[in-house]
Figure 1: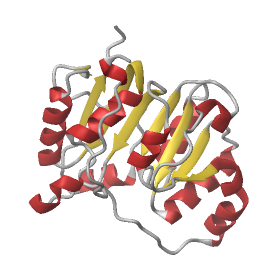
Figure 2 (figure 1 turned 180 degrees about the vertical axis):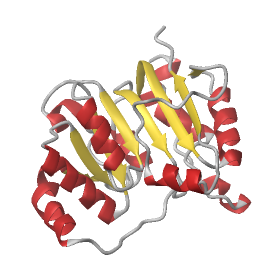
Figure 3 (figure 1 turned 90 degrees about the vertical axis):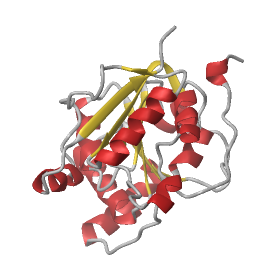
Figure 4 (figure 1 turned 30 degrees about the vertical axis):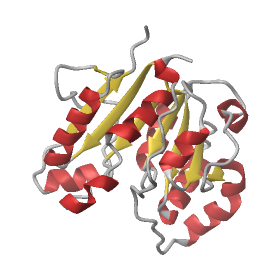
Length: 234
């Protein structure tokens, strides 16, 4: 086993998210009932049986993990424009999960699956080197100092995510919180097996759709920060 495939030790479990429910429209409720058995999976705690992506999607294709897919609009748009890759979205907001299922059904997307639960537990169920990309778009910034330990982008979590990247795979983060962006950059740069794809901040990639969080940030006058790091191919 090489150092890049070493399983990072699991730290004491601290949630990086707020479990969220909420009211759903009749269309979302219908999508959840009809499509969850085909496109959904529940993340057990602790992690359950390892996931075989080929079995999950019914084919072997590069796999993108979307952590925190929100209402699913961006995930559906990227999956529709990128049919040669599979997209595994993980979310804890039930209306968002239902909305993504509705989009999947209405657009006839076959390369999307939706997981409900803790993203880090889901990652532990995936094989090492199985991910072509990990997207972390506008994660909870946990702005209060005492809550920084709950942030997703921190050294032990990044080591886990990186261990699941295939050589040449990318970890792409975006945030509108300047302080969190700087923290992200330090953390990603300090990882011994990730390389920044750009001299500093990444230019906004055309393939990342504008999310509602980005629109709100722009309206409020906040800058958007993208970071793209990759696991070297050799």
